[in-house]
Amino acid sequence: MDLNVLKSYIPLYNEALLLTVKIGFIGILTAFAIGLSGAWAIYFKIPVVKKVLTIYIELFRNTPLLVQLFFIYFALPKLGLKISAELCGILGLGLIGGAYMIETFRSGLESIDKVQSESALSLGMTEGQVFFDIILPQAFSVSMPGIMANVIFLLKETSVFSTISLMDLMFTAKDLIGMYAKTIECLFLLVVYYLIMLLPVSILGSIIERRVRYAEFGD
Amino acid sequence: MKKNLLTKMGTLVISGALIASSLAGCGAKADSSDSASAETTITEEETATADAAEETSEATEDATEDTAKVYRTLDEIKESGTINIGVFSDKSPFGYVDENGEYAGYDVYFAEKIGEDLGVDINYVSTEAANRIEYLQTGKVDIILANFTVTEERAQEVDFALPYMNVALGVVSPSDKVVESLDDVTADDQIIVISGTTAETYLEKNYPDIKLQKYDAYAEAKTAFENGNGVAWANDNTEVIAFSLENEGYTVGIPSLGDADTIAPAVTKGNETLLTWLNDEIETIGNDNFFHKDYEATLLDTYGADYENTLVVEGGKAE
Image (cartoon, rainbow over all chains, first blue to last red; front, top):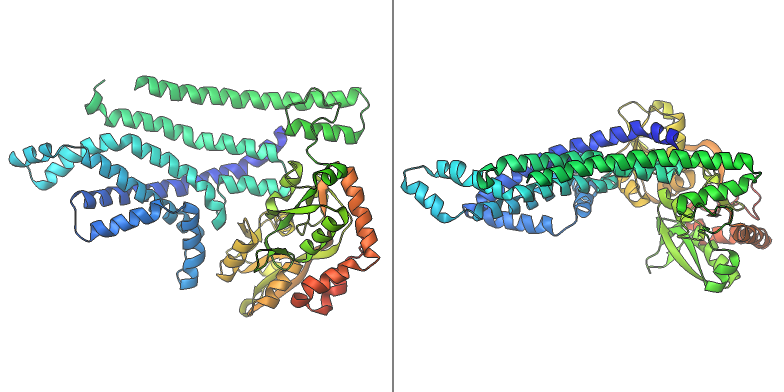
């Protein structure tokens, strides 16, 4: 392994890390929003919307992200809808993530006993108060491990972005190997950079999980 | 819960330490092998193979013997009865899979001849531009016959046999907005290239200001170009000429860019026996004008007769 080679590649990897984190972050936020609103709609069994969401979940959970990206990036322009590579990455990540997040939030919501909402209603709380003050905080606490698992899964899924010409970490490594054939250095940096990106997320996740589940476990 | 957090912190610290130590270790390794080569008088070639062995396996101690060779010699290939040849599967008309699911094209026509003359079966391995060197260095294939342009950088990593085709770079763009000079490309425009090709390396080196949109595979780059994702597509001129002939509405604005290069088969660095055999083979079949026949069988439909003498290199003698 050549240290000078490593050093000269670091700026490129930094750039790739930034792009990966940026798209990952926005994508995950989108997934989060879809997940929360979708789970809410399913929990309250809103007609039609629930059916549509079920189809959406099955469609996106049972096809690989790679195939979805291919479709969004290469097939949609043929139908007249052109999307930039970055937006396509965000959309792909948001949509597949959304499908997973809905299921995670839903499992949390459904784990809360119906007795709780009935009791709260009988005490005179409004539907909104019951959902946001009683059900959601508890459901969130139950869903937390699943949410963190999804976040890490989504960040790792960014490695298929090379297909749509996004210079993420994986593609940067592959590209450099193709040009200069410094395989060991490139792959080594790749592992290091994925760890740099994911370990803090994992640690932060533990801290958040602990805060959110305070009510459940105490100290 | 606290424990869990501690474990994760621990993992972070340990992996940090591992990374640091492996960095230090590698530095030391390189140093020791350098000093070893300075003290003893090993030839350059031997240290090169020793270095390769060091990279690919952990058996660095007995690097004096060539124990960790990844390639198969000519005899080993003959004995096994199969040769692994890396070709493109999506680069018509050079290496592609035809409608019957069979490999076909200019490179494949030559590969068939190699299999025939060696008396072995051929196992085609589909490659992408960026992993051609990898496949040879890890011994996944014996020969790469995938439109592999000979360059100095690549020659340090693999051994090229005699050339069998001429090539330069070319740039194709839509006919209504032809790019005739790379100086016309503005800062907002993007040029499509394929990762790991000579076009990419050339543009990175000579036009660092031009934004490149990089793709993994030919098929994807083509689709992206058809979708209008870039103002132009830079690649081997053979490829862009073929594209403009096969697709209406595209013009090759820059038919020749950079140095004239050649395309040759490549083998793993140090695979002398196979390399020698290949060179002999190319010279021998040149006597029957094999590559002209190859051109007429595979490329004539695309390029017409005009390009025959500019493209074909016969008997390994490039002009």
